[in-house]
Length: 281
Image 1 (tube, rainbow, N blue to C red):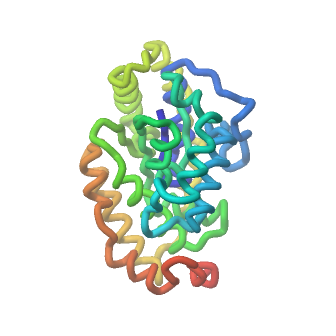
Image 2: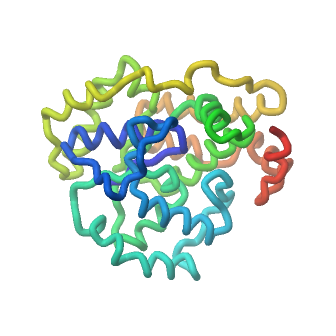
Image 3: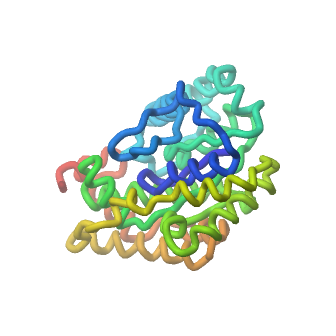
């Protein structure tokens, strides 16, 4: 099962909760080590991270400069790379109980079908756009506009490939008063997916949640000025998703089109090179 969402959206926490429910050990040999921005670990394999970065590079983009148009993963060197990597990733295709998290899957989700020769269920974590942009500013030095554009484009591409059988939650709901209900819903989703979750894992998952790690939510940066219209457009999409109370269809409809504010920002900074974003810091 894949866990994804825009960077800084709580995907590591969600992947950890799922692993607690399944009582799965971390595969430490191939996992990215903990870091100051993710002290409990990324729950992310080095091999899949490396492949995703290769795919993005071949498509002419990278994690912080996502494409406006979804690449065609079935063509040219993109498909050739996926074909070449099938043997390396065959355990994902043949093993049933596993959790793998990577934000880049928002863009490369369709590529994984060529890699694994099947579609894998998705669990999606969505976080407030202002908080994500604040976290990207603090961690990577990205301007408010840049962070907001990343937030929208990641969710926009992901929405186009989700199915009603996938699972959607907000990061805020995991840390708030609805945490117990979210954990129960994740347990039910794992059961429906035939992954045999452990009932005792519900208590493990509850104990794993620590609101003190939600540092980006404190002191959100200023989104006035040039970033204000874009911030409001992203906020409207986020609130539409929240109003759907976990509905995948609501998520898909909220990101079904590019809002005018986002198109204006992309037109201003350049459609593909994003050069103006670096100048706007």
